[in-house]
Each structure stands twice: as structure tokens, then as C-alpha cells.
Length: 220
Length: 219
Image (cartoon, rainbow over all chains, first blue to last red; front, side, top):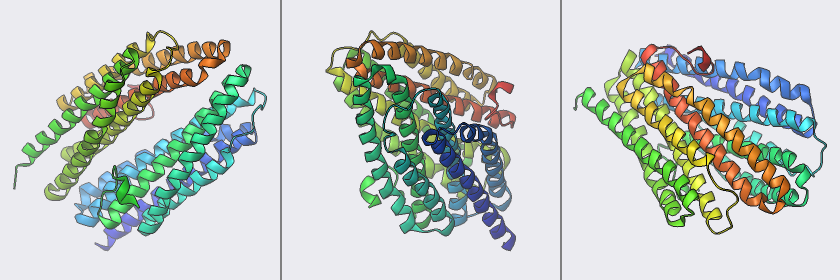
């Protein structure tokens, strides 16, 4: 059984590797927007294939563990959670690709609006991603809960920037395409936050055995 | 202890039931938008709780089947895919709720434009979901492969809707807030189509053992 524990550690390690890649992609895609950095955007687009390969490799690894080790109880739950987290990470990677694509389209347009609060929002979101994965690896329920709280902060930032951008568009119809790109970017960041919330919820289920999904009152 | 095959069949039924519920939410959310029917939109929002309960129920069924039966090979893959389909269905339900919320915002303001492409997009998307689940239950990779091309049609409709709304906003800035709602409806329908595509890809993986994710064109 020692061997099996090592394989579980390896599974966690692979998920951490994937999350490091995804975090880097988020960071690069956002600096592509804020610094108008085309090469950062292009790197995110190039790295997507790597994220996808890793997703399939992790799925394969987890399914093999289920098949060959016939795990019970806690180990089984861990592997099921790993499968779900893997899907969430891959979606976060896709969303950073969306941001990078919008960054490219913004390059050709003049900067017209205060950059809403993309930097603040993305810093929050990146820390959620990191914390949710740390919480998974260390089985830390408190850390997982802090991710759920941060999600509300991200949502309010997104709502504020949305209203700001809508009224900007009404006043500056010639700049609507840029503002729509910015709305899309904040929406993608908010979706990334939602995916780290999923990860945090899976961790709580894993550690505490309670399912907090769809029960907002139980998360507090 | 119940027979594994019976429990698998129940799991199939549970997924189909959830699929039917999600399909109806998608349909009603867009219908509510077209008919400016706030009550129908609110029903979609109320139904979300049921969809969420179904998701939790299916997850615990699968985990129990994994724990009690220690399935191998084909059955194991089937259970993993049931978990993935479950997640996709729940997300589609969320997206339908988002459409319903936008339908409510739009029900009491003057119409932005006649909605032609949006209901067309919705019926394409419903059909994709229906066929992908059908393919899952029948373990039919050919049926699943037929779902994949519809995704391009959905994307094309989405692009049409986007550029039409963009023109409209640039010429009539007053419609911006409401036109954005319609853009998001198109985007949500496109996302629902992506989830149906995920299901179809999972079915192909299940039947053929090949992973077509991330290079669906090879199929």
C-alpha cells in the first residue's frame, strides 16, 4: 500500500504542476491586456496545448489508479475530487486563452478607458486559484473557506466594472468594441474565480465530508 | 446488495431525467425572452434548485457505485464519464438560469430588435444536448460524432448576432445595456453547445476508447 500512497502523491503533484501552468497563463494574459504585451498573449496561446495534454494525462493517471488500486473511502474521494479539479483547471486555462485573444484584439485599438480594476481583480483571482490548490494538497478546510469568501469580492469588482463600462459605451459609442472586450475579460476572470470556488468546495467535501455545493448558508 | 447492472441503469435514467430538465430550462429561458414572459423566466430560476439536487444525487450514486462495486475497465470508464456529463449538465442549467435572468431584465423595456437568430440558436443547442445524451445512453459513437459539426453552426449564429448587435449599439447608444444582455444570451447558448460537445466527445471516448478532446477535427 506504500506504493499506492506514493501514486496519490504523484497525482497531487501533477495537479500542482497543472495549476502552476494555469496560474502563469492567467497572469500572462492579464499583463498582455494591461501592458499591451503581444508576446505574453502569444505565449498563452502557445501554452494551451500543454495544458490540454496535461489534463488528459491526469485523467488517465487517475482512472488507472481507480482501476488498479480499487481504492476505498477517503482515497476514492480524493481521486474523484482530483478528476473534478482537473476539469476546472483546464477550463481556467481556456478562460485565460479567451483573455489573451481579447488582449490581442485590444492591441490594435487605442486605450480609451481607465483600465477598470483588472489588475486588482486578477490579483485576487490568481490568489484564489493558488489557495484552492494548496488547500487541496494540504487538506486545509480553513484555506478552502477563505477562497469561498474571496469569490464575493471578485463578484462585486466585476459588477462595478460592468456598470462603469456600460455607461462608458453609452457616452462613447465609437469605443464600444474595446469596452466589450474589457467586459469579456472581467467576465472571464469572474469565471476563473468560480472555478476555483468549485475546487475549494471539492476540498471541503474531501476534508469534512460535507457537500457545500448549492448550499450557500453552509459555506460560512 | 443490488445488482450492479440495475444500478447502472438507474444512473442512466437519472442522467436522462436531468438532461430532460436542463433541455426544458434552455427552451423555456429563450421562450421567455422571445415572449417577454417574466413568469416563465421565474419558473426556470425556481427549477434550478431541482437540477442542483439531481447533480448531487448523481454524484453520490457514482461515488457509491465506485466504492461498492470496484468496477474495472468499461464500467469504470462509464462511471467517470457519468461524473463528467453530470458536471456539464449542471453548468448548462446555470447558463439557462442566466438567460432567464436576462429575459426578466428585458421583459419590461422596449424590444431591442426582433429575435430571429436567437431562438434558432436555442433549438440547435437543445437538439445537440438531446442527441449527445441519446448517444450516451445508446453507447453510439456515430450518433455522438454527428453532434460535433453542429457546434460550428452555433458559433456562426453567435457571430451573426454579435455583429448585428454591435452595429445597433454604435448607431443607437441608448440600447447598449439591453443589447449587451442579448449578446450574453448568445454567448450562453454558445457555451451550452460547448458543453453538449463535451458530452459527445466523452461518448466517443467511452465507446471507442479514443480521446477526441482538444482535437475534435480528427473525428
